[in-house]
Amino acid sequence: MTTIRQQDLIQSVADALQFISYYHPVDYIRALGDAYHAEASPAAKDAIAQILENSRMCAEGHRPICQDTGIVVAFVKVGMAVRWEDATMSVADMVSEGTRLAYMDPDNRLRASVVADPAGARRNTKDNTPAVVHCELVPGDRVEVSIAAKGGGSENKSKFVMLNPSDSIVDWVLKTVPTMGAGWCPPGMLGIGVGGTAEKAMVLAKEALMAPIDMHELRKRGPKNRLEELRIELYDKVNALGIGAQGLGGLATVLDVKILDCPTHAASLPVAMIPNCAATRHAHFTLDGTGAAHLAPPDLAQWPDVHWSPAPTAKRVNLDTLTREEAATWQPGDTLLLSGKMLTGRDAAHKRIADHLARGEKLPEGVDFRNRVIYYVGPVDPVRDEVVGPAGPTTSTRMDKFTHMMLEHHGLLAMIGKAERGPVAIEAIRKFGAVYLMAVGGAAYLVSKAIRASRVVAFADLGMEAIYEFDVKDMPVTVAVDARGTSIHHTAPKEWQARIGKIPVTAD
Image (cartoon, rainbow, N blue to C red):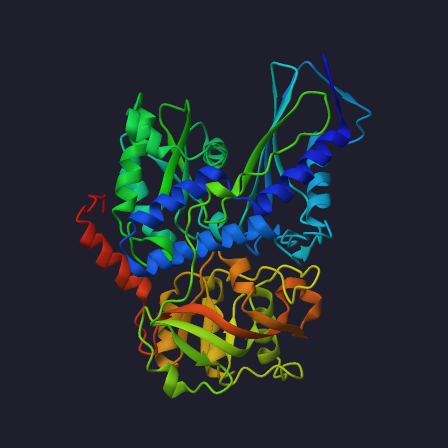
């Protein structure tokens, strides 16, 4: 019988969450490096280069890969011969306590993103607890833990369907992936769960994402069963959709497809699909009674020799003198380097702005969006001498319903976020002659280095969702929707799907 100390599990969870906040899994980095060298789309290649540069910076500086440091998900397998010493908590509570320690670490404080009362007040728990824990009793005398920090942008793109037994899983996936847009920050992985019941399929899909990337090895040796055949088929056909890195069109949309299955009812075919983003964060450790687990830091020599720098054709833009007429000259796909002052604001701030307008109230003193640029971001708190912590973009479609209000009543000139905009936002952009710019999701630390000053100007009680004013220098963005309403996220994937020349046949 093995004796496991409560504190060893707590400390191991805390150490693992800190570890994965700044170290990408090496298998992901290798696969992304291969995708970079194979990529033929200049825009997608630039985005991948930013992600790789950001990854190395985070590994060296021990700062988060993404400003969204995720909700913690753990799969814990407890051997039935394990004895717990001095345990006063449940296993789930131990994992949550490790989460609290990790996210409050003063040397690398992680962003608290978890809210309680989700259908009501949505109050931030301040320490990213509780974790989501799946615990299983298994034979043996060890405790096996697979743990991940899952970002909201990719988690929000999770899909589920109850197919008929005769339906095609491939057809459903190929029909569904384009509807997910680019808010999940491709290139990443797709985790697919097949069978069981509705909730079992979802858990299988999430657990599948814990496995290492091995598509190259699988293709080299060939499939051994139907699931491996299905993985290869989906990998090829999803990439043939041409969505590409950040949805900018290109060859690499997924780096791997993982599938787990379970026997199901004869009348059912439950299928779940959950993507992992460019900030893929997961680790595995074992407790055997000898103390807390230790994760060995990866050798940074394994990172590909890719160093990002702005394209020579990038246009420098002074935000302090920017006019609507200048912005109207920008074309979809143009690369810009922004300098000057911008305001920030995301979900909660937009809701408060709308409430002020509905009550006929003015915005707080110092908040004026007229002819300004807004950045959809919720940064990590700074540590040491930082002006701001990692500050990458959040998914822009969540602000779509507020876009008309912000352009009509508050006079915004441009917006910066992640991924595509929906039809409601694009129509408002076209109507008011505004512009939407896209920053790379998965390059949060790199982006933060362009921010030279930061101060909260309103709604300080919202924490990371407060309105900040950033002073930036050469912040890289891409024109995603121009003043005429043309979206690169609509045009580029179609162009690259045609170039790839492998048009998947999907069900109507």
